[in-house]
Length: 147
Image (tube, rainbow, N blue to C red; front, side, top):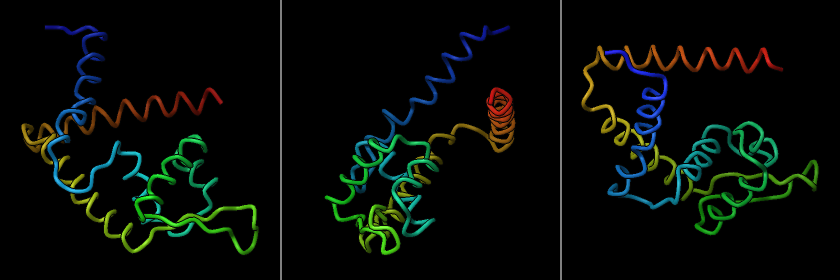
C-alpha cells in the first residue's frame, strides 16, 4: 500500500508529539517544557557563557531565552553575572544545584528515549535513523543553498 506525503507527514508529526503525553508521568524535577533542560544541558557542556551567544547557538530568540533563564534562576539552577571584560554582557552559568539537575534531566531523558523506541528492533532503529538522517541532511542542504 502506497502512503501519501500527507499521511506520512501526519504520522511523523503525531509521533513527534509523543512526548506531550508520555513524559507527564515521569518522576523528577518538573519542567514546563524541554527548553529548560536544553538550557541546563547547554550550560553543562559550555560552562559560563554570554547570554546573547547562548541564544544564537541554541537558535532561541533572546527574549525567550531570557525568560527561560529567569525561571531557572528563580529555582536556583543558574546564576547570572556581568562580564568582568564587558559589563554590558551577561554571563550565565550553572549553580551546583543546576549541575545536579542537569544530570538528573539527562538520565530522565535517556529513560524517556528508551521508552519511545522500545517497540522497535535494533534493525528497525537503524532503518529509522537512516531515514530521518537523510531527511534532515536534505533539508539542511536546501537551507544552505537558499542563503
